[in-house]
View (spheres, one colour):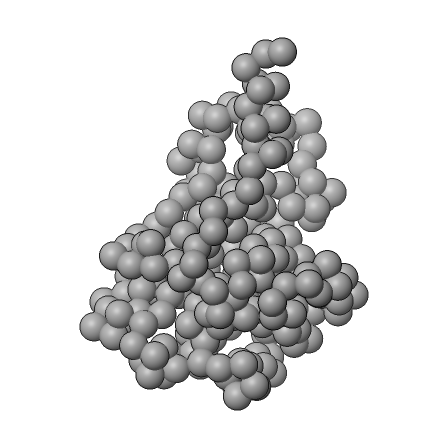
Length: 266
């Protein structure tokens, strides 16, 4: 058995760290019904957190909830189109009323649809903005007073390495994902006095079902091998493991940072 096989067996048998500080914390996830977001929901629910999430796919959300029905708190789902700010804000407001002030916000929802800049229309630009930046800003605005009341909080904005490696097929996505860093830094300073931490979690090319089904081809495999330092593909649990740490008290002095989980691509 080679060293690579031994490593893979160890990983398969490993379990995420347990963070006692996350137990009973109220967690809200944007885009939690599939992909990285679904892994966030599962990871925090298994830590004993009280998780609520928004998403569009009710079928996938219900399947996720069924999977987590034995957790101490069964995750609460809100069907929501995040481009509709009133719908998003109403979901957050209901969570606060029914579960409690939100202590951890995971600004995950996004769409990295490939496009050609020359084909861009006013309407398409607005859709990218309304999907990949605007809801995240207003989600923070909706939870911030509760975090101030609690005297602490952790906001985790999801970034992307796509714009860092100059991806010409996702220019607009890159514009709004790069904006997350400015959002993080400004709010980390603004609310640091309230012990509210704000960080950007930056995934590499993460092997969600969507990425595997729609985008991972032979050329993609080649790019990963050439770009990453590590030979293994980034998995959703690699991102959620980092999120657990950033949300926990173990990272209480980490704020205004960009944490990249990409196998050494950037």
